[in-house]
Length: 190
Image 1 (cartoon, rainbow, N blue to C red):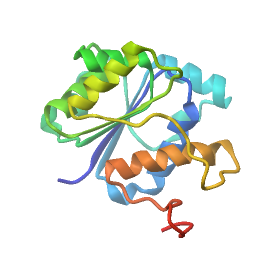
Image 2 (cartoon, helix red, strand yellow):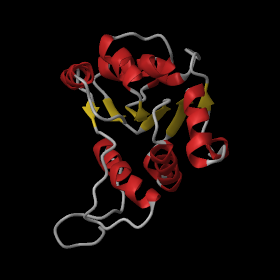
Image 3 (cartoon, one colour):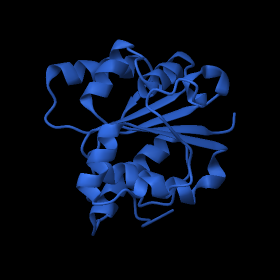
């Protein structure tokens, strides 16, 4: 199966993660056939507040309205095999864990889980309460991957974007996308 990727950007803080992910996906376009984006209105507001711009409009990907159930990744027949939710609010996580498909983000998550495809959820909140933890457990048991937006420091990142890339690169690894990044064990990049 060729890679078809959906990216969901929700209203959690951490727009820099979405920006770095989209920047990298532009450069890695030879590793997927299709890519679609769904972005909540809260995500757009948080992007503007945190990054000071509306550059999410400048990416060369099709955007789908949060309630557009005719989007291709709203159905398993379109064969989208990867959904990355970056960042993922705890509210979105809770709806995914409960099987509530009330918008395109949660429907896409339901689809990839039912089709036994790859769901990667970059949760962005701290601290976690027991409801958050149980929702993460439920999504994990259903086949999803929880990848908290917890950066690493051993690559000595110098900027906020480099710090965010330590998580984004891990997400891309989990998605099966080849990315040049810092690797533990002696080699700076490979």
